[in-house]
Length: 631
Image 1 (tube, one colour):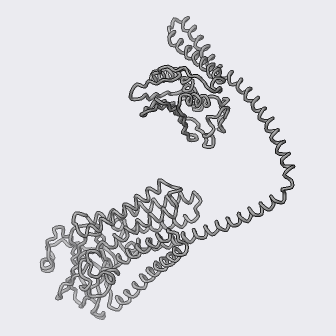
Image 2: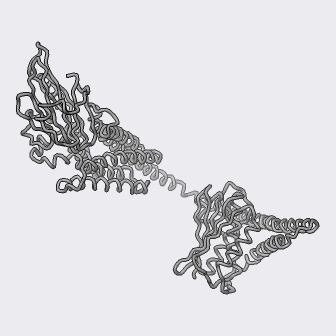
């Protein structure tokens, strides 16, 4: 058998009498098919295969034609002078001439060429592998195939029972989930290989057509849950945890769709098949990514997990590419998913074993630490007679700390004076520069008086604000501070402050996002302006020129929020809890001058108004400071 001919009947109207009596009327295309396959993918057409066969005079007459592929709904075999043989997934098991998982047809060859015909159709991907055996070769092939499959299923059963014993011993649910996953996967492959139809449900034709994909869909959902449990994604990768449970829900939805297709023609089974392949590929890639993150987090057993998903991803990819006609169909591509799933479950078992070893090492480490703690306690009892001497040393250290603290206070006052000189220099430089420009423009006949006056007024206002901050520092530190309450139009006040800051900090882009409606509150206008200016100045101080400073005014039911966002160096997490403390300076590597009073003022002023402060920051990205006040 060197060549066969294929005719694709899209109309589905041709019958065997027409084909056999007038084959020249039909467009049969020749193709080489000996011990190879033709893959047509998903199609609703009927495929006719004409196979011209003869034998050598010295050869035996009895042969077997095998189609080693189960994804064919209907297969009709026509031999010259013999009755038609009906087979396929939709045919009863009793119609098969061999008690064999694949479709096989006995034929008698003569030394003259005879035409044999196959009529094939399926709702699944159509592949027509043809293998011609002598009867002795066919028997040998059956035995070898059964042995290989027995080794595969024996290995699965061994893994299943081993981990079931572990579950009963340690009561860890991840072993139970693994057992369920292994059981459903093995049963799905068992059904896909045709054995379930032979031994479990020979008469359940409709169920057999969807059993493999239904069982593997449930196995896929269990695989996602097992991954979430094993990698502890709820604690370490919560977003990925949600992705895993979404994929598990998608698998269960597909299983339900396969089941519903038994009772309704509205479910396009071929489409659901394709979705199953697609979700399997997505799941494998997602779990590879999750395993990679777990490895980076220090989970040693995740290496086996990554290898397991890599094996499944490879098998599923090859199987999907074969279904969509992107790679040729052969023994390896037909069994790629089964091979990949076998390696996956084996590597999952290795991962669980590695987890047991890791937990044992942790217990041994804990025991060692407990023993060390006992030894430490014993040593502490032995040195109890030295407590008096230690108490004297501690008192000496406290005195030294007091001296150091006094020195630090002195240093803070020195820095405070230096800060005053530094902060005053900027407004004074602006005033001097604008005055010089005003004189030069006046001599040249240029009239920019209003512009220069605005800049000078802004610098003077900034000087007055600086004076107020330092003059208010003692007042704010005293109990029972009295606020000078007045009615404040927040929109107008913020616009004035932003315009002033644009003049005072011309190198920055100030963006003001006002509220959707006008906002009026009762507050101390003077103190509130000091607080907001502090936030604006800080945003510029810790940001690079040309960067954006964003001011948002946000309304809530009974509160307003004023937030200032910069694109600066950010605040390290360890500094966030102390950033509003008096004289506290963050540990940022950017040495920016300051004494640590500004944010303390902001917090004090906000609390005096019955409000609260909040900071959100990310190192090297920027910070957002928010003042929240009652309306």
